[in-house]
Length: 162
Length: 209
Image (cartoon, rainbow over all chains, first blue to last red; front, side):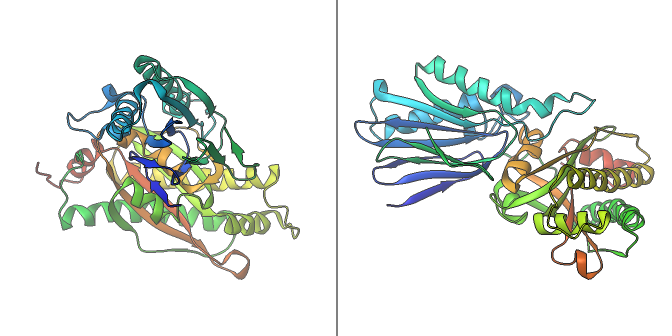
C-alpha cells in the first residue's frame, strides 16, 4: 500500500489499497471523498473559504473551499468514480489562536472554512457523512481506500476514525 | 501558480533583512532583560518560499511547537510569530520560574510563554514602527502549542488570498546558558504582499512591477 501525501492547497485521488494523507491541518480543511464500490478516494487541503477572497484572477483552485471541493469532485469523476456514489468526510477548521480583545475575524477562518466546505458539498449534492471539525487543535488526516475510513490524529489525543 | 508577490532584487532583500535585524535586535535585548541572560541574535534571512516549504522550514508539519502570534495592521499589515520548540519552551519556563520538575506546560508555564512572546513581539514591532515611521497596531498576542503545520498554515491564510508563496523574514533568537541551549527561538515576520511596496517607499527604495 502506498501513501500519497498532499500539502496546503493540493489535491490527489488514489485507489485501493492506497491511502492519501495531509499533515498538520489547522484552520485548513481536509475534504475527503470516497466511492465505496470502486474504492477510489480523494483528498483536498483547502486553506480559505471562498474564491471570492482571492485578490488575483489566476489562482490555485485547491486553495479555496468552493473551488477546491469542485476540483476534487471532478478529479474523482475523471478517475472513474460514480457521481451518485461519492460521499464526503471533512476534518480540520480549528481556531488555532483564541480571540483577543481585537476580535480579529481572521482568527475565525477555521469555522468559516468548515461552513464553506459544507455549503460547497451541498451545492454539488455530495452527502457529508462524517466530520471532525472545530476545536483549537491541529490535525493530521489520512483517508484509507480499502475501508473509506478517515483517520484523524492530534497531539495528545487518541487517534480517531470516522 | 499565480504570484501576487512583488519582484525583489538584492537591494530589496537587504532592506528587508535590515528591517528584520532592527525588529529582532530589539526583541533580543528585551528578552535578555526578561531572562537576565545574554541573548544571541542569529543572522536574519529573507526567504521567498511556497507555503509547503515554509512549513518544512519550520521543522515539519507535525512537529510540536509553542508559538505566540500577533497580527499587525496600520500603514502596513502582516503576521508576526515567535516560535520555539517544546524542549526549549520547557527550558525557558524553568529558567523563568526556577522550577526543576518537568512541569513545564502547566498554566504557569503557558503564562510564561505568553508573556515572553508578548515582550518579543511587542519590542520587535515597536522597533520596526520607529524605523519605518509607521504606526503599527498589533492584535493582542496569543499562544498556541500545537503542530507547526497547523499554526503556520493559519498564519499564511491572509497571504493566501493573493499568492501561493510568502516572503518571510526569519531571525533566530537564542538565549545563552546551558539550561536554555538546544535549538533556537525564531521570529517570523510575514508581511501581507501589499505591504512590501509601502515598506520600500517609506525607506526611499523603488520597486518595479
